[in-house]
Length: 126
Image (cartoon, rainbow, N blue to C red; front, side, top):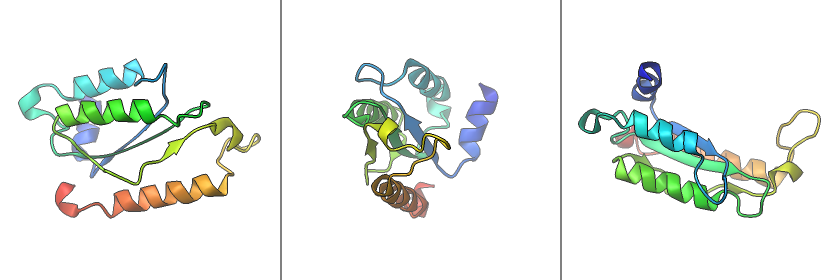
């Protein structure tokens, strides 16, 4: 846990890519965020910028789990990039079967815009 927290402390920002399990945040992700937030007044999450995205084979594109991650980070006094949101539904239809990489042009455009926005995030939040 010490290494995990130190890697967050050293980072300019944190990118969370999450699946969605039964319309919610994966337990292991919630547990990791909870551990990283301890001790609350010395938390490595305080004012740390986060960007959140995710992918799922369902149609919802991880909207519910991303909302729960945002709620959790808000309670921990972290900053979350407000947009653009990237909700990748039916991910299995957008991946190259051989390489496992995205080959859907529309998804790649959204991901590029998402990452460029996170890189340009206000330096005062970093």
